[in-house]
Image 1 (cartoon, rainbow, N blue to C red):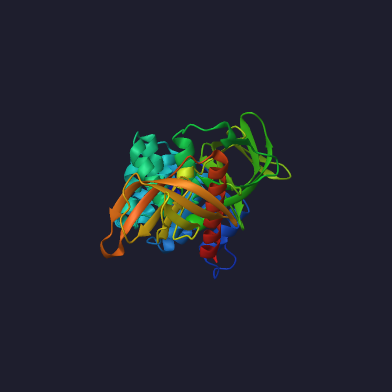
Image 2: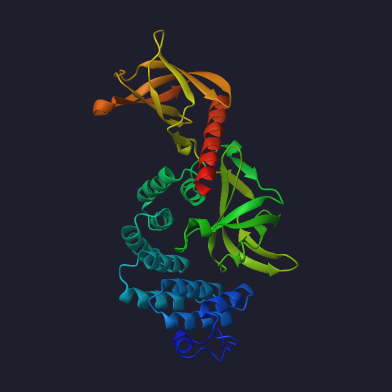
Length: 388
């Protein structure tokens, strides 16, 4: 069966594929063929699997991913629209249809689908990032910013949210926040707009093999036994984690090379940016702050609630006047730093006391970078513990 055969023919006929052992599920055999690069044959078996259980969205998703590789996105769109006529409350299916529309650059349609997905699926981070992406394309910059901040409040190390916020919104970058990537650099690769498999399954691993002023060539991204589902024109995010922050770049897949090492060519300059803004370097319920004192007076009993590279929030029993100047003693990587802070807000919390927001004043760049690295290390440690 050729690529030009339409989907209705595929559904009515398995295409003469011989299945030697019918005890093997269609889906399992299809995955084997897909991993061997036999996408046309895999497509026929995925469709056969879907015919046996048309209400199962997992096989529908695999059909769509295979059609995407074959650059037959319109057929996948038809499939999802048919499915959603029967299952209108299926949030993941709405998300996947939105991802397909996004591939077609139908951003208004994509936004509608992502809104339904977010509404029906408990505001999943993947779906929120997708919706933010479509907002950026349809002129809703502030809405996108709010959605991405929501994601980063849940997971401060979300690579995709940081890239969309730091790169798509074209924040002004300092010279020190750009760095040319090196050959051999290990990369995490993800699609700009994700399907509904879940974040842990949609980060593919690669490395830089070559680059020039306009493109980067990377080894074909894989996750275990699976290659990244991608076609020419797909937008991708490249990133890596350094001790100081997350670094990233965005680009477009423009070509494939199948030499000794299969390569994916990405249209993007080889300059990666520091995408984790200082304002997003934040932890809650830490113990870095050791002592708080009113300037020239006694120390204050407190509990650290949140700490960022720009300030700290504390819980106190008695109010502190806004604009008060405080002396702060922080323990950063076993070294004490004496800083000055100014109270910028005070929120009564009833019997719990008061939340006091303090901004650091007269902090030099070296100390701020040191504090940012310290908080980033804590974020990484907490993420590792969540993964275990």
